[in-house]
Length: 100
Image (cartoon, rainbow, N blue to C red; front, top):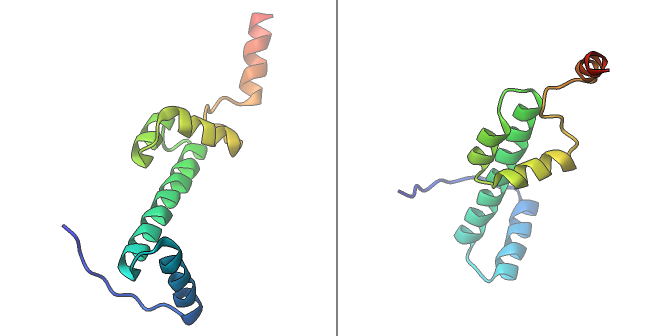
């Protein structure tokens, strides 16, 4: 079910929104909805990446929450250089010492 909200925006934001409407050949309501959907998706991804970084969320759960394929979430982690394994350099050295 859709809900109606009202929001006050500053003149520069309104001018930018008008440009978006013209560019997309759509009305203000649709432009705001599309921009908000995009911003929320980006926020979900950034939030999930931060939670993965803090080892509070698994990669699989994050991908699911962001409605992304697992490979895409892994690619984002790689691009942002986020260690999601929780496996430290010290632990690696210890394990290698045990093997060698």
